[in-house]
Length: 194
Image (cartoon, rainbow, N blue to C red; front, side, top):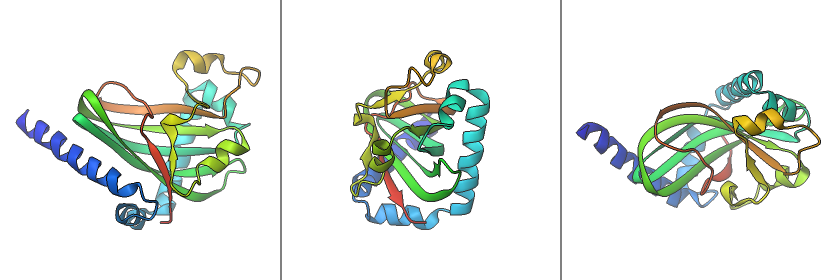
């Protein structure tokens, strides 16, 4: 128990520092992260994660055909004890299936929380505005977007082209670990050049 608590506190401190430095799109942490990314492996992992999500989730499968692009983060790590952090890398899969752009996501949260978990998420970008927002110079604060909908299992079953009215839909997948709740509040997405 003491070892786990020490790991959580260390992870929280590192995540907080990382996020503070990564708010600059060309900050040292962003550049170090980009240098450590294998773009071919990240592209393969992102494609595999999207294919698995669409195989298991009919709502995601339905949105895939009409999305301008899908930003897939196949492996996010989140941990914390009162103060928490999350981070990971992903790829933008364009509607023609190509991958040319890579991104990092990171965020800090606070409140009643303790634990560590891993998961993935995909953002289905349904219009040109959403597609272009991800390349803002200072990064895109995902959780603050009024046009973002987090799709749960109940909503996924009822999504059709007639019910689509938002520009971005988020799907979480492959959740493992012990930490309650998933969300995108405070998450920032920044483009990287691996």
